[in-house]
Length: 153
Image (cartoon, rainbow, N blue to C red; front, top):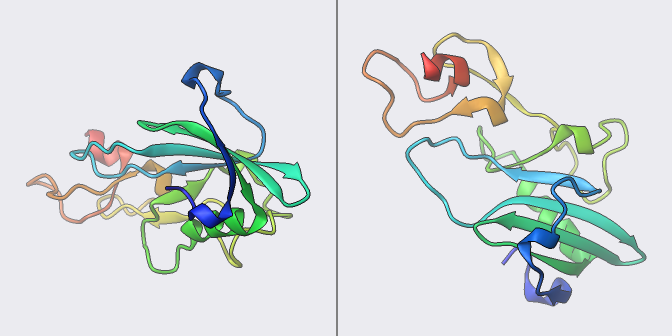
């Protein structure tokens, strides 16, 4: 469940082909960093303001659908973006869909629009969406966080 039931106004059955692949609104992506883990769930969420106290949520991945939620529900969804406890967050904003100078009200204070981290191998700072965090690093590499370039070499 993306948000608790008490915040859901309506959940609609929808054919996956009806979901826009570039919907309006603020986009969130699940940050797959572990190369040996296949996850089934939601990989993408679009938060689309409908007016008043209603937001449309389009989501897809292994599961897909559309729901309409209250402003409290979208604020609860925004809490997933609280990066304070995670060096590598599970959910990130798609920066092209968020105005860094005027972020949506439902984002927690201090939410990084495009958080970064340093690669343990080359020490270059990259977006957390561009890193790999393997359970077991290759024998010839030290560390736990690798940029895609280092990982692919």
